[in-house]
Length: 125
Image (cartoon, rainbow, N blue to C red; front, side):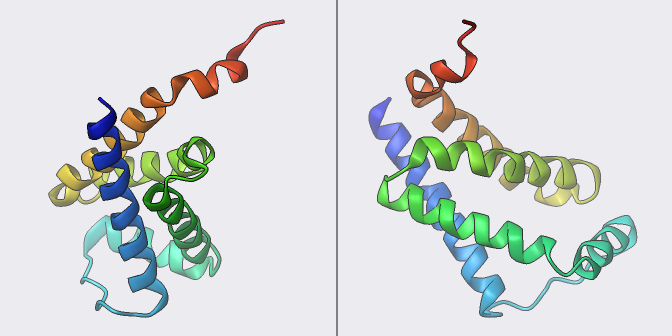
């Protein structure tokens, strides 16, 4: 389980680092979007803060996953992002759903692997 956790953590970290760095440095052209996803994406871009915020979170959590430091915190911080990635791909761009499922399930696996660190959050005193 420990080796699988390290592999998933590293893959997620590299994926988050790649997507955030390519966003900030415009390394890849934006893929053409159509239909409902295009309208949704235009709304996100028009907000002017949401994409940079999400990509900054992805960058910091990617660094955390790659280095293995603060992974418990990074798992919680990145969870809403991975949930949104999954739901957006499920409802608007099903072609990308396998990658979204990997990201979400990988995040859940990392949370499960560090479950001892989260028990205090759910303690009823």
